[in-house]
Image (cartoon, rainbow, N blue to C red; front, side, top):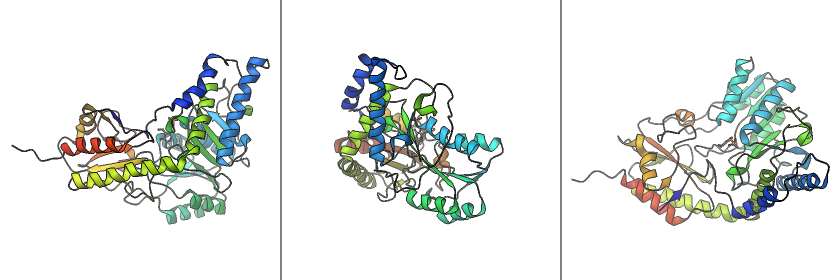
Length: 379
Ligand code: PLP
């Protein structure tokens, strides 16, 4: 059996997304900047896609800018806001994705003051501390992710948006993991910037978008031609854009159905693991369905001499999972997110992340294989 439980890393493309993209690879290959018929046809497809994304987010098409993915969108929002809006201070957290963390660190080297909001033992933001930081620093950009990609913790973005508004701070949220999994309403959220990346919701890789609230006027991060209404130089990734919009449309068409199915998988895995492995626990609040991203479960395993080989051993059994985004070697060592949690370093960590394509049978299979690694040796 081959089981893919690494959907927070990337998801399988939906066949209907692929079908929607195909004509823009084969037949409609014009450059959208060209004014002839071949170009115009493709331009229309881009603008139709932009409108679709905007409608789903209850935003205006002029607030959606296509990028090469989440990383570029995060960089654009943070760097351009700092350089153009007189930002002197950034509030972020130590468990952001590197697309944010490394961007902020590079700005700190150039003299921007950075404050890291306190987190509790489970990696949840201390909202009182955030309030204090906002009170004592004018000209602030807050960049806090909605859903953590490793442990699934959710931020109360409504609350943080209100706080930022009250203190006149800009608010960027890395919404890569929650986009198209939750129905974000840009009229309701006080967000200046939000981010989407198609490959996290069954769309193609290498395409994403930045939502920029219309009250923010910033200049391009990538300079070049006049594409994206002068906001992002470079010939558009037309089939990527078409695929992104189609993937978002499919996600929204049955968001509650997908959520229900995935929550069932997650609940089953939590229960089965609790029954099968003594002393199993969960990192962050990923076992609390009300406070975590429903697609992510980060399991904290008892100390075991083979914990370093955990992912490798599961891989041999046909189960693809992850130890954390920074992990490429088959162990959980190196996760800057887990390092911030108050946890026993001898314990193993494994992230299972689910999609609409996963089944209960796959959950049962993965738990059985994982549990085998924790059973006492019998002579
Ligand atoms: N932010 C988060 C929370 C992510 O999980 C990822 C992808 O892993 C990114 C940003 C980067 O997105 P992309 O792969 O589209 O550059």
